[in-house]
Length: 335
Image (tube, rainbow, N blue to C red; front, side, top):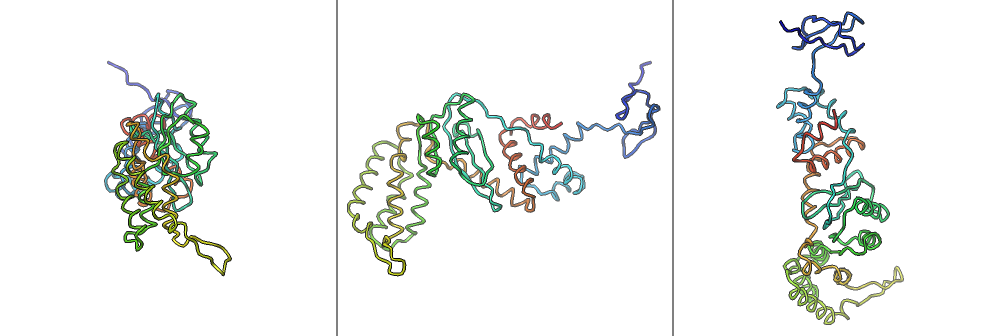
């Protein structure tokens, strides 16, 4: 006859325990040594069961009320567990690769928090992120340096053209190819020129920006650049025309939005079409935009999070997205 294994008392550590009925479906034990009562519960299994619902809450656009109806746990129990788990997000680890083509972009939330994302365009995975108050040069230089410090070679950087990003890349990894997102250029100039511009110059420039994203070879890129230069020479006097404001005592460009659009394209020209020479470089940074959209939809569903819980929620979202195929890893690190 086999002997049953005795339960160790969690209070004093002795094995001098006996069964003492049941409590909420679990066997109840009594310790003869210290008089402590405890149940035969399994914290690891309980954590695993709740963690599954935590993942759905963070990543799958489900509210606590919906999860409560599906899981059988009370709203109070789920809130207690979820909010206690939020600050325990595992430390972010950079996935090592020999060479990457980075997508860099930032997005702002209503509470003045900025999420800066560094994503590998080849494997569609986040390399690094930073939660901050703005897209600051020094922080971006630190992030790029941290990526290089783990042995990653940054082959190219595709961004929306923010001056700080380009400057940081030039200072930290000058050998990297900087790529301006053509979609952002076309989108911004389209907003400035409006859908139905009144002047002939603006109408022609709007047409050029609409075909910008269709450039797929070096020959067509050269033709587009020539067309833009010809357009600018044709309307240069009109674009640079100024008027004097007597109230402010300053000269202003008479066609402000047209001048802004032309200047924007001129500054971007050196970085616009290098993807035609290097097929690995992505044409746009749009690989990040859907990610930001999905994250903001989730946060909109969980309105009312405190500032600290808000940041922790983003950290967990990024961690679960990057470890989508390895859910057990997140559980094991939080047991």
